[in-house]
Length: 360
Ligand code: PMP
Image: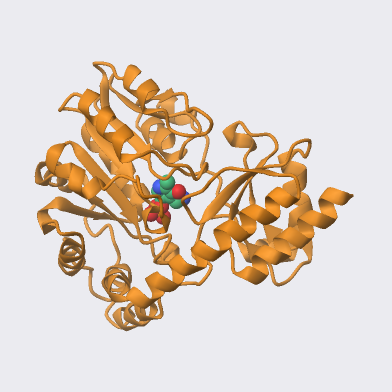
């Protein structure tokens, strides 16, 4: 085992509902831990996946021709500018594997999405982390950390777990400072929930900055996290190199079929956006009324800090009330919790449980 593998810590996902129910003797659990879509999947996507299951004795299309075609039409890019992956996580890791040689580095912000660091370390590559400012990406600080060894920059916009974003002007200034042979991966996993007017139009910026790649996912607004499907928009050269390294048949037949159908389901998309538009202010205001600090969010979750309430203990107490959230101790926030926006009843259940626990 190479020393860099022996030194790794595994990614710890949230507990599955069944486990919480068994362990804590609760039912009707509100799972607000993994930023999934509270409305569930697009019914059209589920129907397409089910239909595809009749053909799973066949390998999927290794080039995902239909899905890449549908994405290309929707996004106004060519299929040659698209790579699809087993979740966008796979594509982030593939980028490291393909472009970062021994002794070279990746760069991201400290306290951002942990997979950038994990994917780098899994290949024995150093991930340099620039500081954030007030839990927002500080792209100037990031530019100062660019070095001759930097090959890939990972930027989450909006960010997970902070929910905050950076503007088009900030991104433009950063891209001007980045050497042309450094790949900038803009992770837009939550882009469909954004309503900020000065949010970057990343796909348009790619025309001016060809080293910009944009990763997105079917796990969040499309509600298909369990099928594992994500995509990357990048220059045809970048996609061609990823294709050399990518495992054959990396996305499944049901996932590809569901992805195509999900893209056509505008109604599910609109309903999901509307839910977040109503629940984001509702939950944020409710949490603030209970004394929490809540960061402004452009995503389907909010980051909240409960001063004086150790995160692990509050998390456990909420589990006993049948609510699962995500404690942020691992992100340097000993009293922080990340809370996914649920249905109104789930958000009310959380606020009710918090009211009881915080009074005690
Ligand atoms: N990027 C960010 C910022 C995320 O929060 C997530 C989901 N936790 C992902 C990527 C990965 O999504 P998936 O692999 O399910 O596409």
